[in-house]
Image (tube, rainbow, N blue to C red; front, side):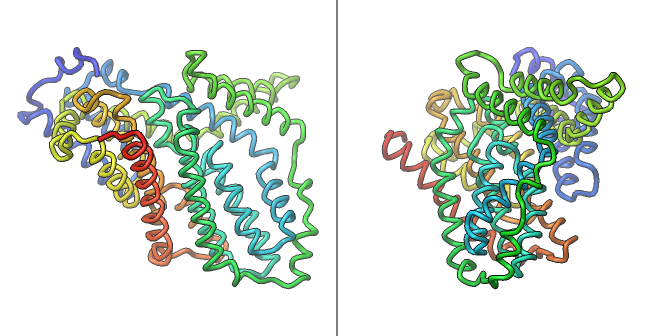
Length: 454
């Protein structure tokens, strides 16, 4: 935070303490977001504007609060994924995987879970489920087996798999951008626990569902008759998309050595793919395609993030977050161990109940304010990883815990396979608690047993 920004905040706003007004604006915004009565981007932008009208922020200081690296990373990756999905590669992999296990329903359950987790790690989990779920309906219908366990597996796998990398889940994008963490930082630190949790998830589902998923030989032959090659709609675009995605991933890995921000790499990748996507076209057709490519970006999410950054910055400049940070240090006695264990569980429980994005956006500056008193950034890394794991795994707790959950539930309802809120919780709560427990054990072992932190 800039000292000048803090100095410029008035002590009183509308006759009230500026801290009280800032907290009231944020609480009201979060309550409205939780009810989902209004569009989330509209709510965030209105709350950000009120912060400025109140005098807590000026337009200049509000802009300082926006993390443009995060926005660039989101826009770039949304463009790449949006164009790539037109090729049919996701459907190809799902059908190919189903045939590799001889259309055995038990094997397909595992394959679709793994495919969902891997795609969610390198793309985003919402796009992944949007593309995998329709294929799931097609395969399960041909096999004559219940769709429910496959959909549950894909929901849980998308949130667990997305935790593994910088770009897999929005909380990681926020944390990575705020701390300047690299793609490899997330990959090396979180992939082991994500892999362990996926093994656990597959084991649970195979035990409870695998043996009950039985199909006739004729039905299995119907799946084997599917031609995965027909899913590929544009081979040339597929090659271009895979090349650009490969370059972007390599760029992320080398970013810390090249001293280039991840947002710049993603924007370059998105721009390059749009260039290749429209290469050799006439002026009118080219511009039309570019406009459609920009439509692939979820601008609601982009503006939601922008507004969210501003209202959280209002809490920061008024000193609310540093005050909460001091209180948190008191509660944990300045112990990294206690702070990490508390953060991972609080993050999980809160993220199960509300959208984890505003929660993480609020927690980041609060935890940053604690770093100096608790030994600096390096000492605080267990706390940061706890925030990531708790927020991402917590998304599996309820049907509204993560965007992917809501998307799958909506698609299932339209296909005549409704997923009830309470029915989902019978599976989601145990899965969420066990994965968070595994994450806690992982953090405890790595940092407080092996590295002897306190």
